[in-house]
Image (cartoon, rainbow, N blue to C red):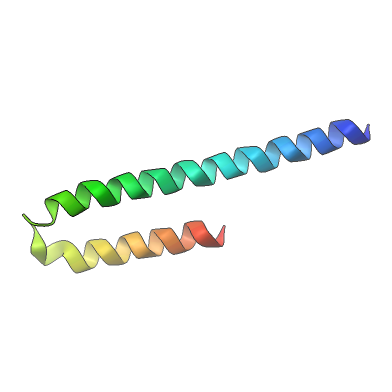
Length: 62
């Protein structure tokens, strides 16, 4: 019984960690895509960077 509970807890923690890492990877790839297009849209750079920073802070606090 203890092993089953521990296994379920470990699985849940692993699933959460994978979800967080996938979200970080998504934010990083969006950041890369936006960074390459910022030269074409410099007026939106500050707004985009603020949004990315907020996303990164939310991920870090999970």
